[in-house]
Image (cartoon, rainbow, N blue to C red; front, top):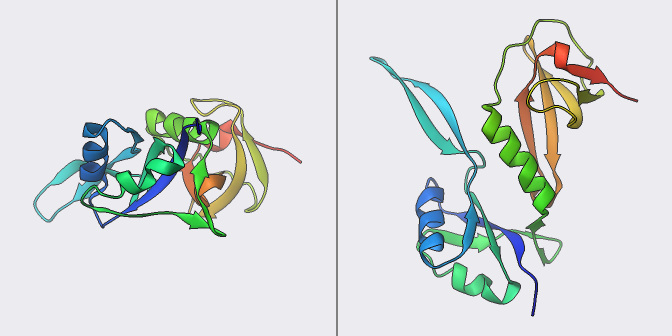
Length: 166
């Protein structure tokens, strides 16, 4: 029997949650990373949850069940790279889960590491992760590449927790 793999499904705009719920109802294992954002309206501020990757839902299934998954309203297609269905390794999903669970965004103490330098996180909830530094404004952003979907996560990490590695 073919093994279960995490496939990457593309959904219609802003329907990730509905698609994930419908797939779960059909008995599929689904992962939809959600992040909380503070939204500013003219009269108020409100925390809202949104999908970390717009239009993406991760579905654990077998290749011969992909068609069945696509029958769910809001499902568009499975992501392909060079003719193959994109799959994501369990380890990469664990990284995404760790990032989501930590609440991610934190302030920087202002000291810099040059953009493009490889770094290792030496403290805090993301300890031991490695990635590349991308500078944005006055903050150091740490980038983790998720190879299976060719997505990058930009995470603000305090400078004191980053160590340059060669």
